[in-house]
Amino acid sequence: MNKAQYLSIGYVVKRKHHRWWMSDGHSSVDDSRVDSVLHRFGQRLRELRRELGLTQDEVATRAGLTSKYLSEVENGHSNPSLLVLHAVAEKGLKMPLAALFTYDTNAKDAQDDSRQLVAIVAGQSRAVRRRALRVLQALVAE
Image (tube, rainbow, N blue to C red; front, side):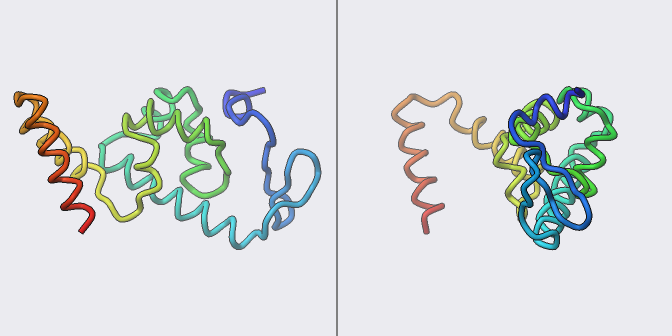
């Protein structure tokens, strides 16, 4: 059993004859829907990795995966488990898992903005930080 299979814990989903199949032999969802989702997700993963200036090998090694498996995910040929996605995000890309699912955000800009916000409030009292947080939440809610 390879690392990717180990991390998938539970059902293993494999592509077979234009449909996705669960390891228990039951057919899963329609091929075209799965392909579309996996393709878009793979594109997003590749985009984030490239924006961070990382190679597939670097991300895969950090996440405890093979670069071949990561390539399959980026090309939409593999349906990674939640545990694999968590390892890729948190260990491989060093970003929150949610960033993988935010398709309209530039990862590097978001990280830079986050660092600037932290730098602004880091030296402030707890009361000032809380007030700044409330102001920011109000701005985002608009």
